[in-house]
Length: 67
Image (tube, rainbow, N blue to C red; front, side, top):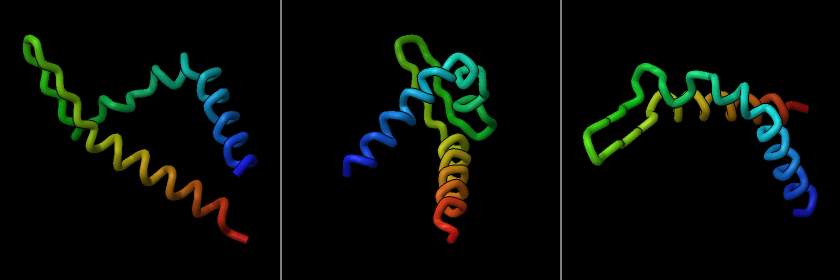
């Protein structure tokens, strides 16, 4: 459990360092993402972004699990 928490902490720190560049990526504004912007209401449903992130995480975990 300790190694997992340390790995998560390091990952958060790395993401924080690279955040200015990560924020420029079009994640959350991909075609297929639903954005409803009305006066007094803004709803963002990132369907395509969730699928892309899920596929990337699955591929990374698959690569790390291979012996």
